[in-house]
Image: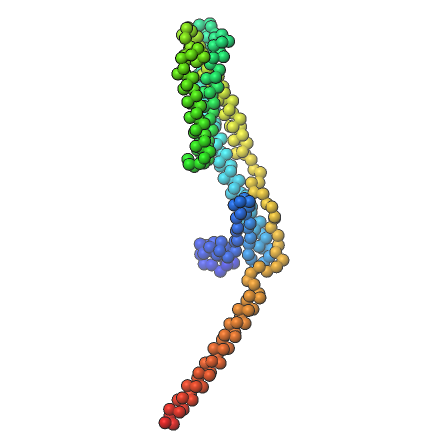
Length: 271
C-alpha cells in the first residue's frame, strides 16, 4: 500500500494486478508467461520469484487435497470390502464344515465367467465414483464409464437368465447344496478381486497425498531485466514535445485574436 501510494488494500491489489502483474496463457501449448513491472529491476525479479513460489505452493496444496479426498474415499471402501470379504469367507467356511463338499471342475468352470463379470462391474463402479469426485457429470469420461458398466451388466444379465447348462443360475440337475456352495465361493472370489483392485489405488493415493515434489515446471527462470519496458522514453518525449507545440500555437493564436479584438475596439471608439 505504501509502495503504490494506495490507502486501501483493495485498491493496492487492483493496482498490482492491473499495472504490475502481467500474465499471458497459451492454452494450446499449456504454458503461462508471467512478468512483473517495477522501477527496480532486482525487485521485479524478487517479486516474480515469490509469485512462482506461491503458484507452486497453491497448486501442490490443491493436488494434495485431491489426493487426500481420494485416499479417504478408497480407505472407506477398503475397510468395507475387508468386512464383506471376512463375512463371505466365514459363511463359506461354515457351509463347508457342515456339508463337507466342494464343486467339481466342471461347475467351477461354469461360474468363472460370471465371477469375472461381476468383479469387473464392481471395480468399474469404484472407478466411476472416483471420476465423479474429480470431474463434472457431463464429462465424456464419466459417460463412457457408465456405458461400460451398463454393457457389463447386460452381459451378466444374459448369462444369469439363460437356461443352458453353461449358466451358473440356470444349471439344472445339480443339488441345491452345490449351488449354495458355488454362490458362497463366488462371493469370496468377488470380494478378493475387488480388494485386489482397491488396494493398489489406496496405496497410490497415500503416496500422492504425501508427495511434496514441485508441481510447476519452470521453462525460463526469472532474471533481472536490463532494459526499460515502460513507460517508453521516446514516446514520452514525442508526447511532451507535441504538447508544448500545441500550447505555443494556442498562445500565439490567442495573442493574435487579442490584437484583432483591440484593433476593432479602437476603431469602434473612434467612430
